[in-house]
Length: 557
Image (cartoon, rainbow, N blue to C red):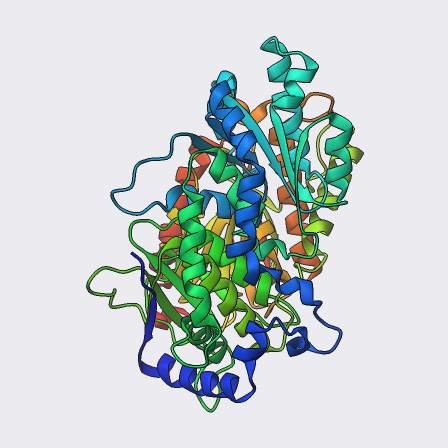
């Protein structure tokens, strides 16, 4: 695919055309093409924050700089790249690895992403130490997960017989010039790839954060830059500008008034079960627009099994016929997709009156700091989880719904669904190692709540989309699922030099997120599965029962 197009229809078309005419009348396309920061106020945005528009050309120099490293890794047989990163830094590289065109050869290497979500992936990565290069990617310092995984790999390389110098050679750090991680990497003797500290991380798919891990794993990133560069001329135009139209669709729908519901929720539809590209788009929209009580909320199709007046669907690269549920269809190759969505997010932020280039507020870092405090205060002992309201079938129920809760899990879940506002949503966040995902619960919960449901595995999910949940419209209700560590495997693997293992770290992350959500006055229920394998089945059974009892509109108060 070499072309690109955006088509829309119905009420979405009407809102989009109004917004596009307003954008053109205010000179937004020309100002963006000229990287004029005054679009967001005289002092709100620095000129360099718009450097993502230059990446299709500027990143070619980056590729030339790391040619030697790529040749060295190929010669050394290091074709398994382990990427340690949370949020945007990890999702872009994943999307690049998944997004090769139909018929293209598979990458020569392999990419494994460790973001603290499914710790079971670590076992598979450690089986390939002879072939493994570890990339630690972050715009700031080392996250709790990054520190844990780095320590585990360092110890594993040492046990494998590598010298300290050889171990240092197995790590590459991608970070901003002058960041805390930059200084740390130099002290450890790691190789370092530096990026522009002014470049917003969520706008960095075509920077070193997205390109370097994928290139080392054998992806054709030169083609990716060609696709993005081919889109650039159209983004400077007022007419036939797909980025402007997509931004007008997102922003126009989110602020729609005049008797029509604000359609600030978007379902991203892609062939198959979705991909890292839709996850990357979701974090871009969440971080770029989720602030000052505003924001566009992204959802996956399983969480929206019925039509809702405040939701519109976008089909990404549909076949000959777009899905019936899609209000908008978008066609573009992967490199153009990255640039197209970044441009559209900038336009959407302008329409909503927010600065899209700010990183999320302090909520993400506060939650990580709180998790670190929980681990430190525990000093190797049990974490302070609080007493459950009750235990039902091996599931501890920790509920804070502003009303008394009985001793019945079904009643608590029904109460949580009742707390979802008429314009709100439910978010399911899991902190369990293995295959469990909120995806399995989302359709039934959505039918019971008559509202959309988003889901993901923590901490990566809330790290990526946390800003829109915590600093956006504030209409979410949350179901957080934690669990005891499974016997054996990576789930309870100790972290060398720390008084905790991965399971305790994952639980601390879940507890910190629950506290952060409650501090913002959001309804939260935490379910802790004493036996995760059996508890998942029990939870799914209760969710189905609650959904059936609430599926009729007459069953809702």
